[in-house]
Amino acid sequence: MNRPPDGPDWVHEIKLDGWRLQVRVEDGLATLRTRNGHDYSSTFPELARAARGFDNCIIDGEVCFVRKDGITDFSGLQDAMKGGKTAGLIFFAFDLLFLEDQDMRALPLVERKKRLQALLGENRDQSMIQLAEHLDVAGSDVLKAACNLNLEGIVSKRLSEPYVSGRTGIWTKAKCRATQHAVVGGWTVSPKGFSGLLLGVYQGKRLIPIGRVGTGFPRKLLDWLVPRLKQLETDASPFSAPIPRKAGRKVHWTKPELVAGFEMTSWTNDRVIRQASLQEVRDRSDKTFRPDWVNLPVE
Image (cartoon, rainbow, N blue to C red):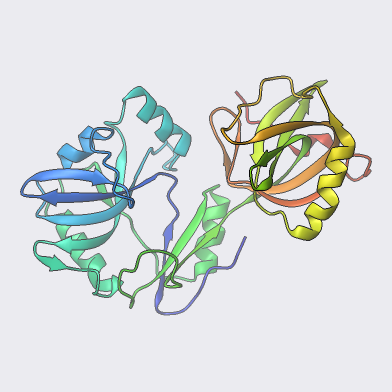
């Protein structure tokens, strides 16, 4: 876990595992757009209808699937989107950028949150749109509680700052990341060079693919790793199931003699790792390695 900031100007929100959207309401018509301007109104039609009664505004937030235990689940959101069953999703509003004719972005966060809370209070019947609550207690305590609940992490924001896009230092993320180990069964190469390791875990004699790790490769490690992978290269895949191919990347197979240690945030419904970052690579001959360190989620 990385340490979140503390101090009287910082507040902390639970990091949601959803789809970032801006709800834009103008003259009773609501559209849903990503930060890049892509229109998702037809993907989440119930949310677009729910926002029609709001005053002219732009609300920043995240649409999420919420499990029965109250935890947001990105895999559940993906399933809802694929199946067109988006009526039960929740849009968590955490910032207000425009209200009527006023550009709110120059106001401090504490004022924008007050205006947002008042706006949502005027539309209490729209339970699909809810305020993302924040906590003004010690960030380390909030992060510890989030990790104990198996949440993804927290977002910390400065109450005194205006709204600024991008990573500017006025907000930070602190993630709860689980450490895992897996067997390396191959690697991928993009036009720019080495791009990641293909990982698996044994069930009996079968090497079950669990996804790819593509970040956390310092040059010193690559100088050792790439020649070692080429020594172990083989024509046949060691995995028990096909590996999805990504356009522009070439796959190389390797004998399953290396072990990768990595951090991750969660598993998808297809039992694939999410947001993995490499921590170490070593030979399976290392006696401290135990194959049961990686456990697939129960189907």
